[in-house]
Length: 109
Length: 122
Image 1 (cartoon, rainbow over the protein chains, first blue to last red):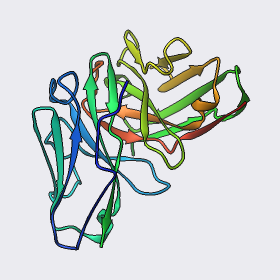
Image 2: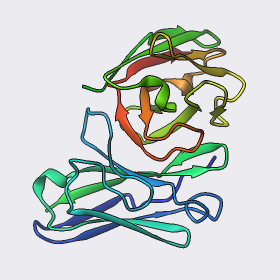
Image 3: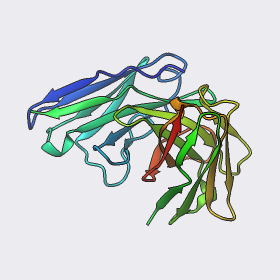
């Protein structure tokens, strides 16, 4: 079960916007609206920040937004802040299973 | 407060077995499907298994199919992972995870435990 493809790293300056891509296939990202995104700080458990492609759980900043086009999902962080420096993972339903992305390290310059 | 607490990790030799447990609290356990997700230190997340709200359906990653069994006891608000024929590549931190949904399609994993560490020696 191959992982979804994410860039290894993305960086930006405070206040800027960055976008993380998550590329799969028509059997996962492109085939279902069940893409989610997770933020993980070092030594901590992941936290859900986006579910079902575009929805934010209660308490998640509206600086996080997401979309999907074809087989690629994207997470955008607007107004980048120091606290956004973390690892980010996408995930998608794939028939009778689930798959995570390779992960992206976000660095705030 | 919604909480998941894993236990049962440890050191085991190749070919050995372990049973992980997860105690859930703070939410209606049988309203949600549950997952096990693992992470090798310093590496990415790997989905391991999912079980539906009532335990009637379960799915596994190819890497553990036939060796791991997920189960749940809704009367005890508990999730389990029976791991057999363990391999060194199974060494990881294992997270118990609650999904937003009930069935076998993950809508989003909204609550994670702190994990229990499994180490398989060769």
